[in-house]
View 1 (cartoon, rainbow, N blue to C red):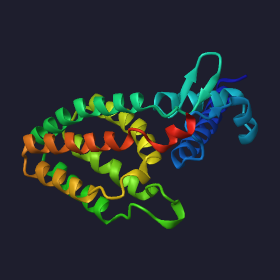
View 2 (view 1 turned 45 degrees about the horizontal axis):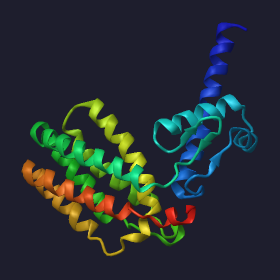
View 3 (view 1 turned 30 degrees about the vertical axis):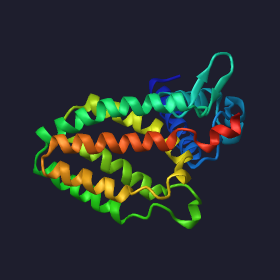
View 4 (view 1 turned 90 degrees about the vertical axis):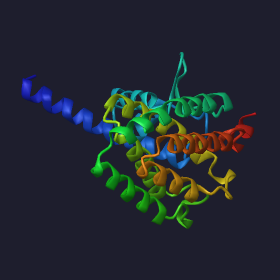
Amino acid sequence: MTQTAHASNSQGKQMLSEQVYAHLRDAIMRGDYAPGDALKPQDLAKEHGVSLAVVREALVRLVGEGLADRLPNRGFAVPAFSDRRWQEIAEARRTIEPVVLRMSIERGDVDWEARVRAAHHRLARTPAYVPEEGEHYSSAWSEAHRVFHRTLLEGCGNPVLLETFDRMWTASELARRWAAQRTPDRDALGEHRRLEEAALARDADTAAEVLAQHLTLTAAALTGCPHQAKEA
């Protein structure tokens, strides 16, 4: 095989793996798979018409993002819902994110302020629920929510910390979607507005406190998610 042909095959495999990854990620986040469901490489390869190697590459990437577990001698599975698992993620977020937010407020410039304001505006104007997506938060709102929280932290200027946030967010987002119906009376709009106001006022103490409270409420909502009862 020539070097050009080898490179072409590698690129083709990478594109297929990206497609399988994106499909599985969306399916898991939509709730097409229940907590603990098996992700069988052989079945997925047949379903997508690709090789096992392509599917395994996509699954390993999902494991790295916290959207799948790799089980000894049992292949892959959607994470099982566990209060302990999600409380550990919540504890990590409460420990790390307020510190990064303080750094962001200290280091962020005017462009960062503008991005925070724009991200909050989009979040506030995006419907959290739409009829066609059922009881779960809408995809548009979920993305606006992620962008707002990440933008708050981007002023820190530290890509390693932001990568840590990305991984924690993805894992907690899965649990939050599963538990979406448990907090219909929560004032999410007010919590996000207070976060924006404190950040733009450069009030690091208040911003960190509001964020910690926000994350604590999220953790409380995820404890005892109804999906857990289905596993019992």
